[in-house]
Length: 120
Image (cartoon, rainbow, N blue to C red):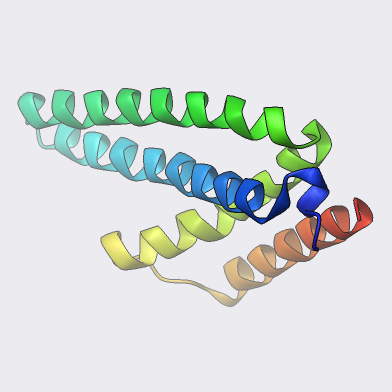
């Protein structure tokens, strides 16, 4: 994966950093939902604001990614968000990973790998 679908290493790192930011949006959404369930409207609004701001940052970075590499390559890598959100769920919310989830993540990652290596 040397050409990283014409984006180079810098473009590839930008792509995956952007996808990590997209996964972080889910964390803010979950925190907002937790606060909403506890009727803590101030913190709900704070987390919704963080979610909106992070989506704005993501969308600007995503445009930069799309300038550097083919659309099909960039979108095929979005599957990696499944791994990021699972890891964030484990680290921040104490969620567990079952064999089924692990197998699902592995299938997604293999799919991403197959599509990505087809671009080279």
